[in-house]
Image 1: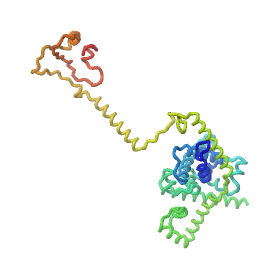
Image 2: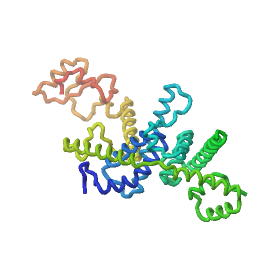
Image 3: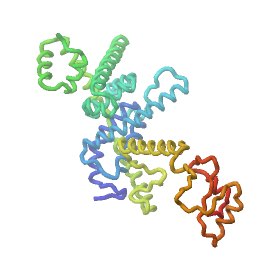
Image 4: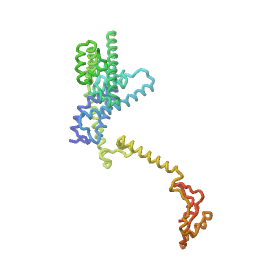
Length: 179
Length: 192
């Protein structure tokens, strides 16, 4: 069955249903911005369906899409950094969510807590952890994706967890002292 | 002795191969510090997987955008059927060339260019060297010097003239293979 866009509709629905949640979470956690994540997902899937030859299985498609999202999110992160420098703000900008968007995307405090903590990590630590936790990729695949060694991935994942643990425990202590 | 925390982190990701994973698990079961670390890492992993991010609306919205974009692209392809399955201007088309092939191509090109410069740079090339040494066995009838190019031109242009002619070349007998040869320049384009 082929729809008007020339892409096999059954294949599109199956792949989209399976892969969108993974790709969207990766994009959302790397960028910290819901609109940006939607844009990245849209662009990544369009690139995927523009391929002349479809990838043989969903795992390869997932890896391919994560790689595209990773490249685009890196550009996004660089652009955001330039913008931040341009407006002269020294502190990190909080992820931009409109009120309605925030209500839609962040249903409870836990997810905001995770996102805020992730935003405090440098990109290279944040990305490996997100690819690990949401992408479900192993160290070897993450290494290939990021152009680093497996050992380097192991170190980055470890450092990301350590930093994340410290950030979260500080936040909890603050909550306790405020309460 | 406790393993490094990096190893414990990798253990949580299932990145420790057999039989080390079993030994590590055995150690973790007995060590309060290591089991605490593993619990901490697993809690962080749990936060990722139970973050409650709702993607339903985003999924619908992005799907609609993708379908729309693909439909627009399909229409553009129909408008430009000559361009194949996707209309891409030729200056934006990409050609995939494997890196080794590219490197080999550049190497060959480099060698060719270097050889060309090497041979052009030499002014003692055998091809360009002319040494007027008359063969004593040959029956020489006429000997013309380049001092009188007009006479030379007249003789060479005369179709009735059948004598063999030896032309004394200028004393500078080293020519470059490029550029206008001295003789041709002196006697003009009519000489042959």
